[in-house]
Image 1: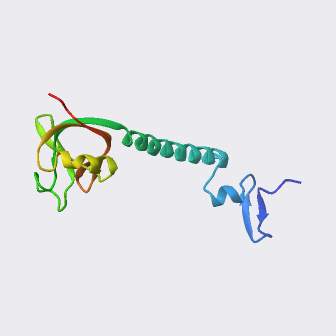
Image 2 (image 1 turned 60 degrees about the horizontal axis):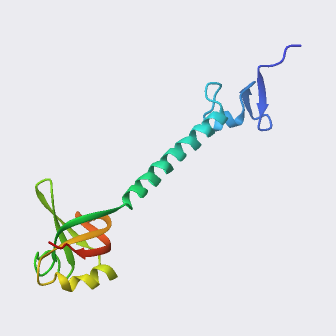
Image 3 (image 1 turned 180 degrees about the vertical axis):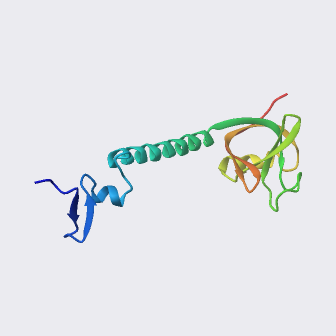
Length: 145
């Protein structure tokens, strides 16, 4: 007696060709794309995306050192509504203004540059906020000379 090439599924209401399964029908798997390979490729894709975001986050938190003209972003530059320290750096022949985020380091140093422009060296993490460059300073010092 020859075996039928169609087998009953779901209590006999649906029929599937022999060798196929409900999993392959539901998840788009076929003999060319087995379910276990689909799972492996999905996991590999998620891992690659996670690695990309981790690498970009790590690169964004790197400290840099800027040397330039330290001055008040309100009093000297007129960029903000309240006093805030800024450093103007010349990069590739253009002046770039970096606003220092208000933290303890920048607040303690602000009086030194509020009424007078001085050369300073700022170390911290740079980020773009609303089209402006900001640096969260971990240290600020006057440049002698």
